[in-house]
Image (cartoon, rainbow, N blue to C red; front, side, top):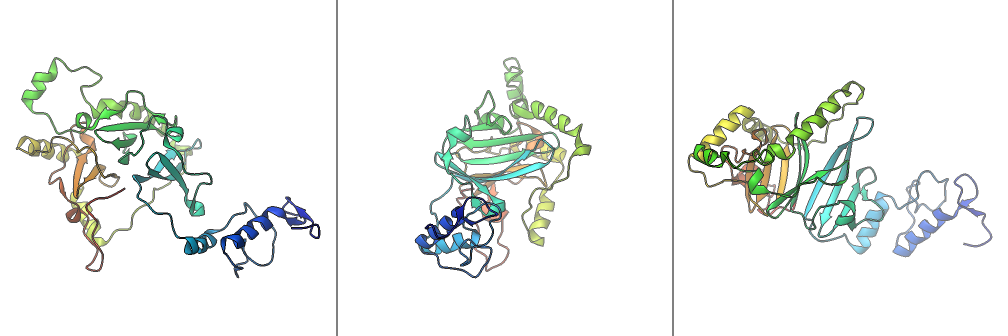
Length: 329
């Protein structure tokens, strides 16, 4: 850079000094000129449109020179929230240790300045969380983080953990109680803890749901992203998706018939809420636990669960490697 060119920061006059700087930094990193005229590494400077940065293909070239980021994440999830205008916002987050990244899907990269400390961006959440699940039905809208023997209800609007949390997983995600245990505990149960999972967040989210419903005519319809499944997988999911009432009756019968699964496991590997059958699935040590959300705090476990991870999620063909027993997210 010298006085021979009229450098400026204005995009519509002179030579943009930021564009030149980014271009030269690309050379310092080892990038050569490219033939893509929309790239900042194009040999001829053009008028600046939008923000200046190395684009997706340029970043891939840099990764080819220096390698990719390595290491395992504790959990990865899409946070789905309501905007002020009634539309849905989808944001992807990566959690590792005491830091997190927000991934900007529209730009195929993480947010500039990340990672940030979890305690700064997610008030009340612990470090090294085990899993996240967004329970989203006609009557529930709950964002839940799991860590060890506890779970945390998170309010994405207030951006903090809800008061009264964490709570124990074994307390709120349990199997139906027997008649004797119900009689024994009836006199000592309080209204705040009697129904566990239901009392924890169902009532409040009913009010949120009703409030959104009153203005539904002004909202745009947005459908969350869906995973592409084979016809065999879809058939399997259809067979698994039974009515809520049937789930509850069969779950009660199963647990009272001698099942050793009295609640969802702790220190889990991953969690997933399936909006198609509105059940929660928890993964640990190669097993999948199906939880009937409609049964409130007594939905553990769905008939036939826990079951093998490979049995639940079969490979699409012989050439596809099956899922490992230990999942990160």
